[in-house]
Length: 247
Image (tube, rainbow, N blue to C red):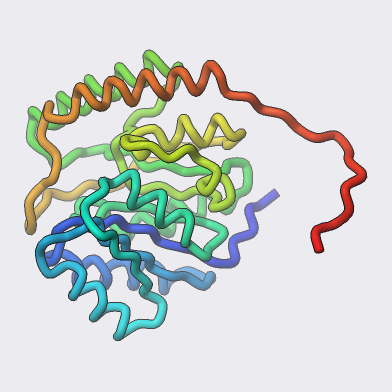
């Protein structure tokens, strides 16, 4: 049975990406306008200190399908995704980064796989990563450790290009670092997950917000927390009830 898609919400965290936003919007619009569904782009400004918010407001003024949330200060990528999930109007959510390293042209292919109906989430894995050697090695080590402790086989948990059911995304626990474990957290709520290879591009404008090892200690504690949640998670299904319909 196919997943019924009626409305797509593209959720994009933004932190000091002024130089990329116009091109990001143009590429996302080109990808989304090729699809048969209604859509919106929801940009979440994570306390940017450059001109990102002004650029976002200009895009929203020019296109009614562009919406934004603006944080009071920098709260991190997990908070930006959580806020986007909570306010997205679509029944299917697409996520990607604002730095143009994810290719919006991959979105229709991920949505087509999602629409087949046998999965609730489709995650991209960067087949040919355009990062430095050190960053690729650090990512492989972190990915291997995450998989070993969570019992997963996810090839690339760090790829932000994903499609997921909105109702499940809104049920995820919110904590700093949550965005690194989205497939695992979705599975805890019964999601079926598929992976597809996607393009990855070098950053040409702006500055990366992530160092090689600067978040390793925090990520380790996040991993232990997720492992604890896996072991303590309670899942139940109600067979029948006599509750009246909601008013």
